Length: 396
Picture (cartoon, rainbow, N blue to C red):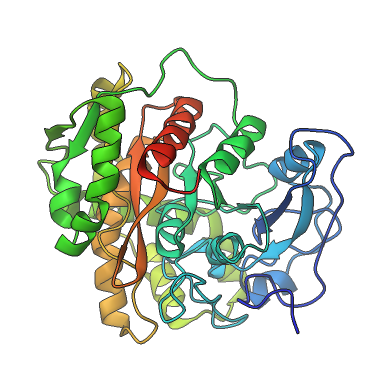
């Protein structure tokens, strides 16, 4: 008998900590992705060689301190894709967590363990991180709520880096209210602009989605329109979502190699084939492509800044399809990754907050609906997610 039937937690002795006696999260539990430091414990970052070459952390990550001080109880560390560089949730060293909502499919990564822990009801809140979709996609795949906050809104002090210009500290919950409750602890005070509408239906992302996904999300979209008024269709990326994916991929790869390349060169770690290939591509990345990706980021930020400045909210499918089957070939997995990251790159390049709601199912597997606001509208976006959950009959 095990208290981790889905393999969400890092193998071995579970690191646990009692929370403060008083606070808004007393009585609730949380887990953290194994890239956040916990004092006295080695941060494994999903790779045995990383764990072998790093000593115990000397202090807690800022988000861990915040949740403990709010009264939440730390239940353990969760699995991550190696060095957080992957979107399926596979870990060849420690085992891939089971997707509790669709056991024959991947859980999504790189915050796979945190998503699985929440979806299985093992904890109330779980911290992940989101660079290119690593909270939003596992939340969509596992049928739970997730938030990628505005870039820089939540401290990553005490967390391992991947792409610092894109890295964010996101989290998961099974209800919209719990997602918001954690936000009250982790996020800065609300800004002057609130994400209250109008809704902007990003046609690029809806067309990119498989028809079954779009159909499954239609009732939730209709509920959002009842709250905020008819959605205005827009075309966000005349360059094409493929161009957004390519620009994001190249800019992120350069950051990943700058952050982790020196350790890789000095250590010669063992990686799974997919992660090995990604870092090899990052090392060999053409500087001209990196420069083009960074230029595109500036263009997208300016475009989105103007579009969302008055409180408008983008709405679109979090992922174009449900999680790939565990039997999917590497080529099929990569095709899903590219199609998916063209959409996740919108908030990634824009530095925007994005909340995903478990709004539909395709062939029994979950798919999520995303709400995206201007930078700093995180609190109001979470409030909108709660209202939409209630209006759409989702776990509120």
